Image 1 (cartoon, helix red, strand yellow):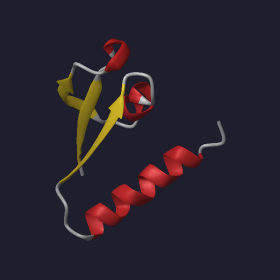
Image 2: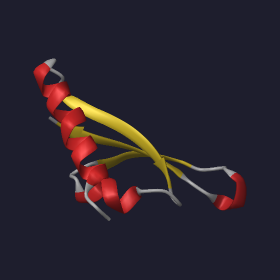
Image 3: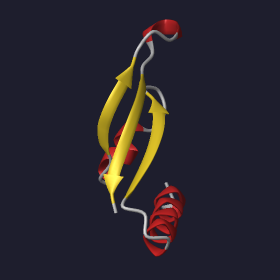
Length: 64
């Protein structure tokens, strides 16, 4: 709640742009940080199901 996660993500995206990357990808489980990443502009690209307790893994992507 101090903005450290957002700062870290912004720095990683900045480095990606400096290296001429066109997009960034990441994955998160449904019980982790999906809303956080979506708030930063990441969009769900793929959902993998079949984990314990009916959990899902989300693969996300953001254009840089």
